[in-house]
Amino acid sequence: MAIANARYGRTHLKTNRNVSLNAKRRVWYCTYERGSRQQRGIWYGPQGRQGYQQVRAWAQEQSHEHKYRYTLVLSVREGLEVQPEDFCRVMEADRRFEDWRLIEHTNTDNRHAHVIVFADKTLRRNELMQWQREACRQLGEVEQQYQLQMQRQQQIVLQRQPQYSQEIE
Image 1 (spheres, one colour):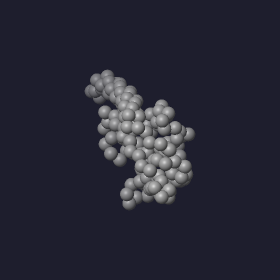
Image 2 (cartoon, one colour; image 1 turned 135 degrees about the vertical axis):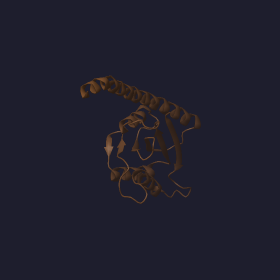
Image 3 (tube, helix red, strand yellow; image 1 turned 90 degrees about the vertical axis):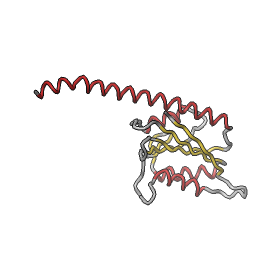
Image 4 (cartoon, one colour; image 1 turned 120 degrees about the horizontal axis):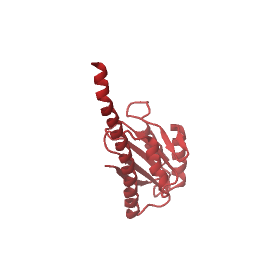
C-alpha cells in the first residue's frame, strides 16, 4: 500500500526573522545518516539530479522568499524496487508543488522519498488530502507495474527450471 504524508512549518517567525537554518537542517537530515558523512541518496528536482550543496543553497534561498516549508513523504510497500524517477513522476504530475527537491531513501524495508517544497500560503486540509489521495493512487499504479514485472520474471524462471534440471541429469 502506498503512503503519502505531508507536514508544513513557517520559515519566518512573527518577528520576521528568517529561520533558513531550519531549511538547511532539513536538507542535511534527509541527506546524511546520524553520525555519518555518507549520503543516503541522490537529490532530484524538476530539472533532474542535483548535488547536496545545490539543494542546500536552494533551500536557503527559498526560505528567504517563502513563508512556509512543506515536508512530504512518499512511500511504497515493502520489497518493491522502485526507482527515484518513479517518485519524481508523482511530484511532476501535481501542479500544486512546481518547485520541489526529493531524495529517495532505502534505509528501511519500504523505499520512500523525502520531498521539500516551499510556498507562500498554506494548503487547506482538503487540498492536502486531495494531494495525498492522488499521490497514493499514482504510487499504487507504480506498485502494480512492479508487481507485474516481478511476477513475469518469476514465471520465466519457473518455465526454465525443468529445462535446467533435465540438462543436469
